[in-house]
Length: 413
Length: 161
Image 1 (cartoon, rainbow over the protein chains, first blue to last red):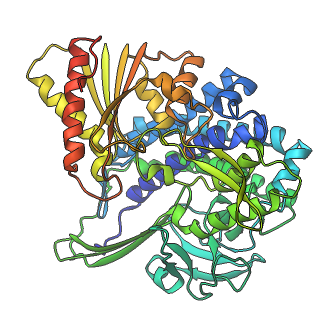
Image 2: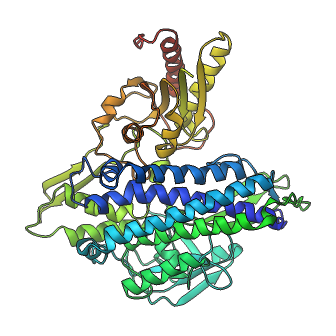
């Protein structure tokens, strides 16, 4: 927008901040929201199927490590950007403050610890999920799959990159079909409006909107950790690359369409983020005082795209001559997945609810797993207590009568 | 530190930020009568991050926007965390909820507060961008502030209706 290129140190600090955000967000999602289904079982007692149940099973020391590394990643964000949420140091042309050499050394030690914790998390996933046939069968179940397009940002070698690169779309066979730069996004992405929701439904413009269906003729695409891995040829850091190869060899090649593998992909991204933090912190240039190029041009219009934890994040602004925003369009991570989320819930419900099969709390949770794997940020849309989500399954007969209701009713009502 | 008052919310989402507005008002009124052993915190975080904010003091008062069905906008409710605990099986889709925060902190041996109060203010509009409160939330905010100040002066005080 300001037609200015930030100095290398500023770009590295911004990427370091974003990598740290991935670390604490992915840790929270895996241990608080995904692990209960696998460590305790998807149909286990709902009262215990939470992080407290996980703590009981894996032990207090592991829980301590989870909290420690969440906090470490947030500390890195505070050191770099002033705050762990809503940073206060980004400016047109760079950032408002750099880091000292002493802070750089501290970040190196913290990043090393995050790398080790990420390796531990992948080992835990292997021991708990992959070595348990019932859970592996669940991951491979056709209740949780989608045959859509996949999107993610890649570097010049087509490796996953969260901060900068081309945005690559691959098809149902893993073949690249589109590749666009930030400013070209409107040529590739459109947003459909449905009357019942204020959240739009983005789709691939050149394929077109064909409704809530997958397949090559439908422009529905997905933007998740699994999507990013599917859309890339590999990971840019060595340990994450090893895990990437392992996932695809275990699950039968690319693209992986089994959506519960998103949790596995998320842990591989956790390791990548930690390794990338370490790489950036080891680069002495990150502590350079040259952190801003002063903009001199009159701002007009700009598009910025990065990868956020839940998917590709697009910001598009137009301004007046004083830089005041006159028009803005944001397509945030979860918004990309609006159609896939709806389709995933429908598919899980259709596959799991069968004649003669009891519709109970276990089944309710297994349908919700199709929603939760996206790590949707709907609960952040408003910040009101109690911050929970009602969920109801109605079993309807041929006459349209509700013959059974299974619910996790919102206690507000 | 004896008491920490935490205002939760997003101050650019109309009534969603009522907790933030409330703690700013508490701060302003406390400045007129110095000496209270109180720390004021504004935050937009929840879940794990909230746990870190809860540690290290004896008493915590959380002020947040609520959207309970059937409540008139601006209504102020004093929620006992024990009541929220009855919904322990319920989870946020995005992070851990408050009862889980309290239980997890306690199991991990963290210095959790001995006493937690949650003051909820019913929103009229928590979906529209805006830095001002609706009239209803503004009234609720003032009532909540009076209640919190009463609680600081007299911990056994009941909410005045």
